[in-house]
Image 1: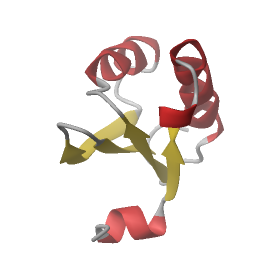
Image 2: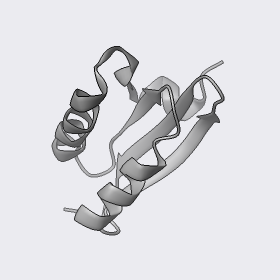
Image 3: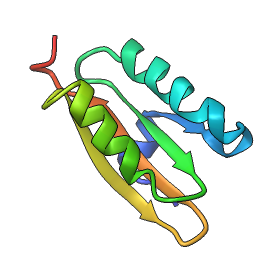
Image 4: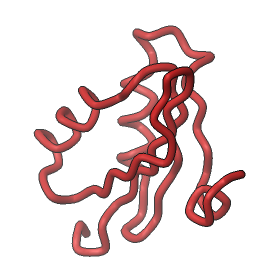
Length: 85
């Protein structure tokens, strides 16, 4: 059952994309996020390296909450903080 957060956020399943396209697509979506908005990333592995990359390029501007932690599917809600304008 989806969480309340997931039900109100866009769900982006990158499992259908080839790995070389995934980060570009995710960064495009992150760049388009408005403060206070989020999306749920669905992936076939733990996207922790993406977290570190986001934090390095946009420090303290995004939230990152695991909704599901594998082993087959990972769901992470990524949001743009209100203070990140």
